[in-house]
Amino acid sequence: MENQLTILAVVSIFILTYLFLYLFFRAQQKKQDLEIMMLMQQRGILDKQLQDSELNTTLEDSKGAKSKLVYEQTKKIEILELELARQKKRIHELKLVAQNASMAQQHFLSNVSSEIKRPVEAVLDFSEDLKKSTQNKTSLSLVQNITDASNQLHFILKDILDLSKMQAKTFEIEEKVVDVESFLSSLVARKQTIATQKSLLLSLEADQNLPNFLIFDSQKVENILENLIDNAIKYTKDGYVKVNVLVDRNSEKVNTVDISFYVEDTGVGISEEFQDKVFTIFERVDAKENENLHTAGLGLSIDKQIALLMNGDITFKSETSKGSVFRFSLRGLELPLWSKEDRVDDKNVDFAFIDESAKVMIIAEYNQNHQTIIDSFAQSQATLFSYSNLREAMQTLKSEEIDLIFIDVEILNNDEGAVSKVIANTTTADVVALVSSRVKEIDFSNSPLVLSGFLKKPLSKGELFQISMKLLNR
Image (cartoon, rainbow, N blue to C red):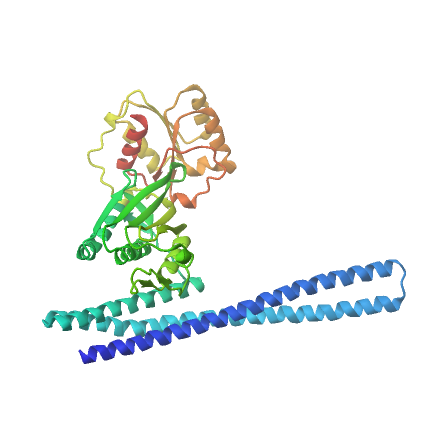
């Protein structure tokens, strides 16, 4: 036990030293930023003086003033130009110093983090071993305190590293396809034990319109939600903690949704005088109900910055003794488009179920994707018009009442959106775009069409069937 406490003390000293050096770097960087700003202001004043002097010289010269006055003004301009050049050079040098300091800070934090992480993880491992071999309740309580303290050090270290990366502009958002239901249920399930220990009801409710799959950085979203749920449980003595997920907006035109995660509790709440400090770095908020209820403000401030980087935000409403509701919103989350390469299950697909009165058109280059649509609808009684020539397709659109159009996105966006405008003015058919990339990488700003969906190339027969049934058999 004595050895473990010694290790914990050493780790604590490491962390405090690390934090001191980080704050020192930040103070130096702020000082340099302030000096650069002051020099930029001086440069602006010099620019104005230089312009005024040049104007005065021109006016004096045009009025035929004595050459001495013109000479004096010219000398003044030369002095101002020299001073301006000196200030520009100084600004450039300071910017280089600031950039080098930022790189040094990031390099230092990256190197030290691994050195601190190892002893922290060792303490956690030792603590787990001690739990298994210790029967004494007092010793077990001390071991649990060591584990909790080590975990807290680990989280502080991670938060400082994230903050440093954001300041150095090296913080990366790593998006991937996420099974939303599995993601949410496993997250809440992991928190059930601690909620049960406090006799709290922890529940999850999800909007029925929430997509099954979305593209986002699951690790960062999970970290933010865990922090919000942990805080809710920590500051709630009795009652409940509720996680609610709602769809705020669904935009089929760009294949995205806006969603919000609400974490509601019946805890002590946050008084009005402290609410403006919740997202302030290194501020401490006293919940007053219990002297042990303190929060460093570091985790939430970083969570908010990460949320903003992911095109989201974190806000809250709170009332003392009645609880809090934190809202973590994410805008423009893209729905994944499945293609043949994703090995989507194409079994039990029968295009004979497609409405036999439907009229379908495809406008795309003749290739395998084009042939997939032709072969698929050949199994149905629907009428299919197939074109690779846009002009011929437009002639048919004028004479036939088409229900559904499959069109290659390159053709749709051709001529700065002129094609989409013609289609919008010619037909009321649903339009599905055939794309090769993620939808957010495509510019639809010139398109007046409200698209009914997207299919990713190479086309999956199963996805083709699903969207055709949805649009033609409704």
